[in-house]
Amino acid sequence: MISVVILGAGNVATHLFKAFNNSNNVSVIQWFNRSIESINPYKNTVDITNDLNALKDADIYILAVSDDVIGSLSSKLPFDNKLVVHTSGSVSVYDIDKKHKRGVLYPLQTFSKTTEMDFTNVPICIETIDKKSFPILKELAKSTGGPFKRINSDQRRVLHLAAVFVNNFTNQLYRIGHEITESEGAEFDMLKPLILETAKKIQDISPYMAQTGPAKRNDKKTIKKHLKDLESQHHKDIYQLLTNSIQKTHGRKKL
Amino acid sequence: MISVVILGAGNVATHLFKAFNNSNNVSVIQWFNRSIESINPYKNTVDITNDLNALKDADIYILAVSDDVIGSLSSKLPFDNKLVVHTSGSVSVYDIDKKHKRGVLYPLQTFSKTTEMDFTNVPICIETIDKKSFPILKELAKSTGGPFKRINSDQRRVLHLAAVFVNNFTNQLYRIGHEITESEGAEFDMLKPLILETAKKIQDISPYMAQTGPAKRNDKKTIKKHLKDLESQHHKDIYQLLTNSIQKTHGRKKL
Image 1 (tube, chains in turn orange, yellow):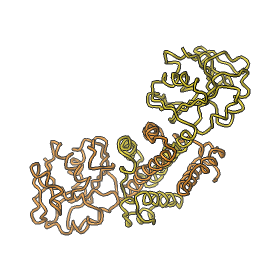
Image 2 (cartoon, rainbow over the protein chains, first blue to last red; image 1 turned 30 degrees about the vertical axis):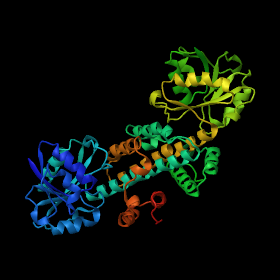
Image 3 (cartoon, each protein chain N blue to C red; image 1 turned 135 degrees about the vertical axis):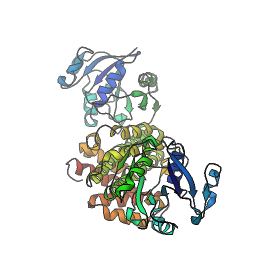
Image 4 (tube, chains in turn orange, brown; image 1 turned 120 degrees about the vertical axis):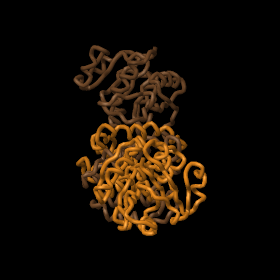
């Protein structure tokens, strides 16, 4: 049984708490947050605290806090030589105070507090500085039921960066689709099956092979019409840049 | 029983042929293509032809051909006063020769020849100029088993334009995600669950509500680090523009 203390009360902390709590070989023995109110609803399920000096002895301490405070919080922990991991995609493992055994457990998924998370669909990227700590972190990752992979800090950094493109930026394109359709009283809902199919398609074939549309075909007439139809200069800029990008990838001349 | 002649042999034509062929109340009585080779594999299933003068009498003629030839092909049809519809998202219903009863049957989905299409997930946008032709086109759309909706030409135009953003441009962001991860020997496959979850999320909540990440949080430190990490100027440009776009939507100042 792996004993765990979780620090932080954001989306990642909450979802990890639930996942570990449902697992048979992990015991979350304590949950810390600076403000106790956020974790108060869990007080009957787990020991909660807002006092770093009251932290219990555990196998792994998980810092599921915002990137900026990982370093300082790790320094404030009143012990050393224990396995302390953070959950960030973009922070180096070396940001954790070197008095600890250091590692990373980065769940590569989008979390929202309201939606339940099925961890069988969440790849966990793990990394430790010393080899001896790796097996226990691997066991912890495994306990969520999803895929896990040893990823070094450089790889994690690019995965996190790529995640911004395929998650945040993609979502913004959905938002623009919403703006464009509603401007003519059409329904964004009509686009939802297309959005889902676009994401499903690249589960099996590469995005390169999956590409279609006027930019790929170099259909200048449609591209010109679309640019004319777009009312916002901002939408025009995005249309132009991403059309160029597709043509760059598929060997067409720039607009 | 609605009798149909399909003209064209692209992805949309092929998928529509299969869908109608599986339906109980539609009979595809003929398939026309300029080059007979493309439809030759279907010669035992349906009457095929490459001769416009050999076209049979049918209730509906479906022009599933490229945008540029819809007008000219409709003029060349050796009959008049029959219901002739095209399947394009961006071409006006008035591009069809006015000697016909005119309409549009636009399936709002991404089609590839290799993947089978489940039409229960394909919204069909329908439009006719004369009211009398509407019921039969509605019956035809219904026969695919998916949702259908009366959509005017302005609404269809913006839906098609929005589809470029949520399908072609989104797919290009997946492609960039691929480029970024492979550059460090990380695996694009690790991002696939995130891609799927991002698309699933907005089936229930709006893209506005679904947004997360450094741009939305105005996390300047991470944004700066990401821009520095991106090796290609082209990727930097896209990062910057879409970060601005998110901040515009969510009321943050521009970078």
